Image (cartoon, rainbow, N blue to C red; front, top):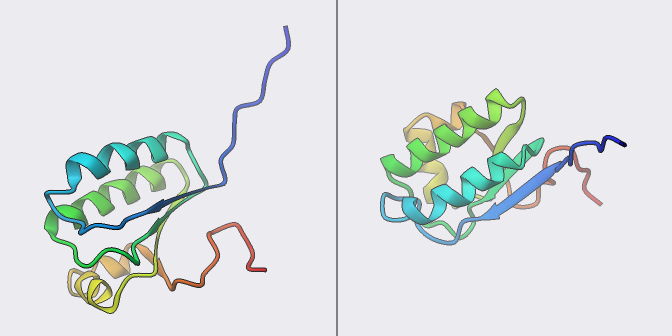
Length: 112
């Protein structure tokens, strides 16, 4: 019997198009949990369509960051609006999470 190599997913991208708040958690948490279970090297959350975030949303991001870190991987927030970036800075989450502009290539990839 021949052993098969485990599947490797280098990058998973999730586009957040709603507010990251307590109301969105029941829908978003299972999506992010499924993304983490794929064990990608990098999970990129494109938050360009996210207008704002509350404490519950920040808690979710930190939970996912911790799960990815434990797996030896990275969570990156891509393209936050100026308002979202300011909220993350005030909460000091910008010192923990990787935050990149819209034109940044996902981790492990090079821009064309």
